[in-house]
Length: 251
Ligand SMILES: *Cc1c(COP(=O)(O)O)cnc(C)c1O
Image 1 (cartoon, helix red, strand yellow):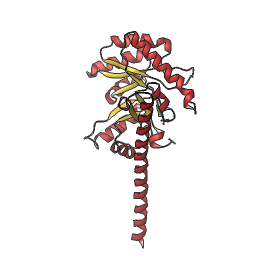
Image 2 (cartoon, protein in one colour):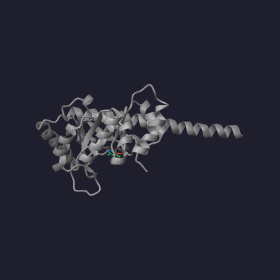
Image 3 (tube, helix red, strand yellow):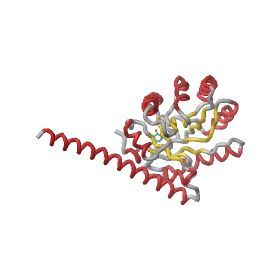
Image 4 (cartoon, helix red, strand yellow):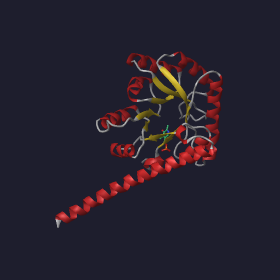
């Protein structure tokens, strides 16, 4: 009974697909609910917090389902991987506007490509990267929206401007006509317990407030991931970057 076996296998595949889709939809609504809850606890409006769905290593089909499930801001950490996904998806979804964000470290020699792909670059962390981005943005006739990444710990492996360099970088960016700094971003050290991460979130908000007193308009705070986004929202996050809690643990 070949046909029967084929039907069984097909039914199984459909079922797995349906199951995965249901899981994703449940994760999306669960996360949105928790985002809203954290906002309300902090006396903030849930609409002021944007969910950046981190799709690094996630396959195209799943990303398409994520878009169907209502996600509109997608975050990638590698220029090349994003390039492949964006051009692949562009041909399939022309009716919805997706915002792509770069959340990974950017090398100067990729500035030109990053600028063609991303609506917001979260990871500008030096004057020289800012200048290169500005140069490329000017050539492309674009004003590039950026965040300045700040490093608040001593970890060697992390990128980001030091606290001491922040004002200098912001000052230089203000002079660059084709960049618009909209806020700050940080990746704190990893702790299982979100309460241990909270001081880093608070610190980033304080740095932002200081910069604002010095005349910089920096409404956005990109902070908080799957394990700690509620604490980040309570401390003022406007952009939370969530991967695993939406798509499952990465391999
Ligand atoms: C991978 C990544 C995230 C998402 O982390 P999860 O724990 O999967 O939510 C957020 N921000 C940056 C910069 C990342 O590289």
